[in-house]
Length: 305
Ligand SMILES: Nc1ncnc2c1ncn2[C@@H]1O[C@H](COP(=O)(O)OP(=O)(O)O)[C@@H](O)[C@H]1O
Ligand SMILES: [Mg+2]
Image (cartoon, rainbow, N blue to C red; front, side, top):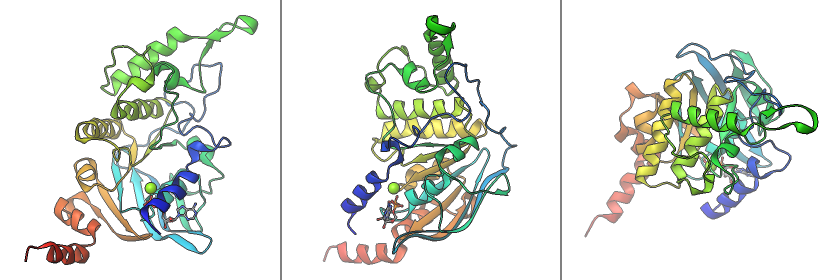
């Protein structure tokens, strides 16, 4: 299958684009009419380095296509698990299982040490597992603060005089963004005027505010230039430092290595191994990703005669 075809099949199955699925970042416990407090109703953040998610020997087939086979990893509080691999490696398949979008065909999925069966993304959200997809579910012409609260707006008053509490929403948006180190002059500006990196960081701040304990980011830096990618990497580090477990998907070892605590490399649905940072250098990670032998062969081929 070519990269292009792969892209299409992935877009087709993008959960954010299905009207039946909740918005990628819809908070778990929040409902319209109340001010959803930080950490909502999701379970509390566990202590640093405690295991939140553990998957063992996960497998997933789409009909006769085996997209994932025998993959195991962990997501710990205050740590970043990076999932690396080329197009078609199975990265999105793995995170869709973690996000409750797909059910695995094989393997064990534990959250807080308990075996779970996810019935859908809402089940994952209820456990504090939030996913930020690459094509963020934002409304570009709406102000930043409206997007921050989309689908869970606090209201003021009762009955016919009930209206959106915009002052509260603006204040919370501004302060939550500041907590992530994002200083936006004007939360009234349309979110579409923000750069790609800034939009990603608003989505991250939103997930944190609505009680995410695990933040899954599917290739958040893929479409970004060096500077913008740097912005997103900073917010990943911020979320980590606030105690969240982060799952960071990328095909770029130079993005993964600086923020990652462990690196799972996938190739054609299989794990090429998982390493803690202390056990692998960025050179080794790059070579592993490129499929060492193939890279050597290419270097031979490209050498000047
Ligand atoms: N919904 C689907 N139906 C059939 N095949 C799929 C589907 N989603 C992914 N695949 C296939 O599974 C493999 C892994 O894909 P994916 O998880 O999207 O990889 P990645 O995100 O690493 O590029 C690919 O061969 C892809 O074509
Ligand atoms: Mg993908």
